[in-house]
Image (cartoon, rainbow, N blue to C red; front, side):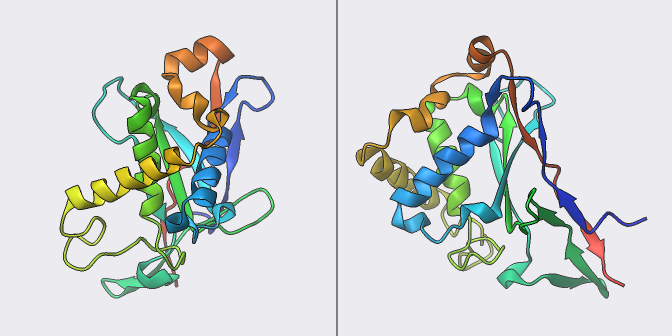
Length: 205
C-alpha cells in the first residue's frame, strides 16, 4: 500500500487553551522575512511550520530542520534505481500546496539560550533556495547544503541575526523565546501547535 498522495496539516490543542508555539514561530519567521532582504524570496504561506516531540530529554541533537518538498532544481519527480518517485504533497487547510516543511524539536529547541534559538531559526530559513522552488539553497562542491565551510555558513547566519536585532523588531515577536519549555508550560498551562510528520516518497507507476 502506498502513502496517500496528499497530507493535510493537523493542529492539536487549539480548542483547549495554552500556548500556540507554531503560530508564534510563524509570526517570528514572517518578521525575519519582512525585515531581511536576504530572506525576502521566501513566501511563508507555502512553508509549513510544525513541531515534533523529542524522545529523550537531552540537550544534544536536532533543534530544528528544514525539509524541501521538491527534488533538486524544484523537480517534482526523480528516478532512483530505475523507478520514478514523487514526494508526498503537503497542503494546508485551504488546500495550498507547501514547498517546505520547517520543524522544531521540542522541548530541545526551547531549552537553549535566546541567541541560539534565533540563530537556529535563521539557519533553517537560510537553507531555502533563492529560487523558492521547493529545493534547498545549493552551494558548489560535495557539501552542497552548507558549502565548503560550515563555519562560514554559520558566520553568515550570525550576521543576519545581528542585522535583524539592529533594526529593533518588536520585542513581542520573539518574547516567547525568552522562556524554556517548562517556563512556557508554567505560564500557559500547555504548549500546542501543528504536528506534521515528514512526507514520504511515493512510487509513481
